[in-house]
Amino acid sequence: MAPNVNINAKISKLSTPQKAWVEARTDQLVAEEMTLRELRRARKLTQARLAKAQGVSQDSVSRLEQRSDLLLSTLKKTLSAMGGRLSLVVQFEDRPPVILSGIAIALPEVSKSRGKSNGAARVHT
Image (cartoon, rainbow, N blue to C red; front, side, top):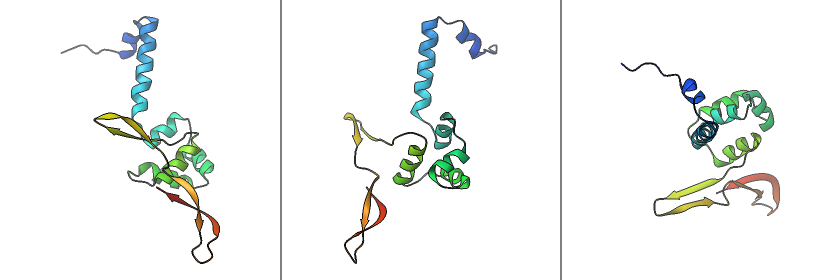
């Protein structure tokens, strides 16, 4: 049976450049995949603070973090409240990634009866 190895002890034995590389690579791997909850925590935000920034209840933030399927407009609003910006990247096996534009853009809703904007925003994708 192999002895227990403490990762902090191993890292403490690395040179400064090696430690910097390990830290940068760790940040990169962590950033590659996060849930909304993990992202909120990484931004040092509580559910209550995020809810206040969005103008919703703390319970709404909690429910949002548990969802696996949500509207792009909801995700955009949540990320904006965290200080971020939503970008969608499409990846194909046979070409470089493509940044998809024009998604979740709020446009004024036009009233069908009068042909005038009623001030409400509708998200078009």
